[in-house]
Image 1: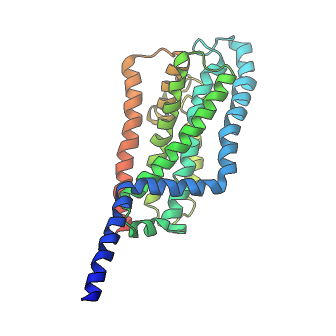
Image 2: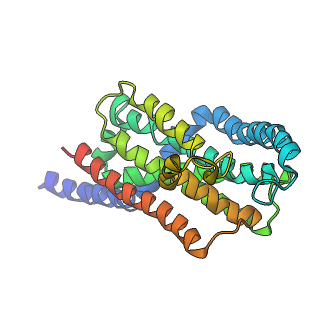
Image 3: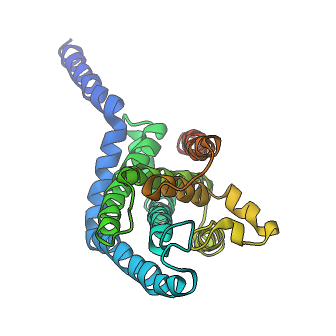
Length: 281
C-alpha cells in the first residue's frame, strides 16, 4: 500500500512535468540550437557582417563602376548597378545561410550525433523537432538580413522608403530554399558527398542563373526556365520591387510570394512526416 500510495503522486508529477515540453517542445529545440550556435558564434557574426561588406563592395562598387562606365549611372533597370544587385545579394546571403543550417545540423541530429532520437524519447515529438530547427534558422536569418540591410543603406543601395520589406523577403527566400534541402537531408542514411554536391551543383548554379547579377532576360531563352523555378529569382525580383520600386505586374508580385510560401510550407510539412517516420520506427 505504501508503494502504491507513493507511486501515484510520482506518476502525477511526471505527467505534469511532461505537459510543458509537449506544449513548448519546438521552443526547447530552438533553444538547444541557439546554444549550439554559440559554439560557432564567431562564424555567425563574421558572415553576418562580412558578407554584405565584401559582396556589396566587390560586386556593387567594384563591378558596378565598370557597368556604370559602359551603361551609365542608371543603366540597369533604370537604377545604378549597386541598387540593382544589392537586394539579390541580400537574398543570396539568406539562401546561403539557410543551406548551411538545414544540411549539416540536420545530418548531425539524425546520424552523426543522433540527438533527435534523444529528444524524441522525451516528451517532444518529431514534428516539434523540425519546427524548432525552422524557428532557430528563421531567427538567424532575420538577424543576418537586418545587418545586411543596414549595410545596404550605408552603401546607398536602397532608394525606396519601403526597402525594409526586403528583410522578410530574404528570410522567406532562405526557408523556401533551405527547407526543401532539409527534406532531402532528412532522408539520407549516410553522407557520401551528397551535401557537398548540393552546394556545388544546386546552390552555386542557382545563384548564377537566377538573375542575381544581371536581368534574367539577358540570358538565352533556353536557360531562363532555371530562374523561373528558382526561389532565389522570385525573392530577388520581389526584393527589388521594395528596394527601388522595380516595375512589374501585380499578378507577378503575388506569384512570387505564393511560390515562395508554397515551397516553404509544403516541404516543411513533408519533413515533419519524414522525421516522424524515421524517429518512431
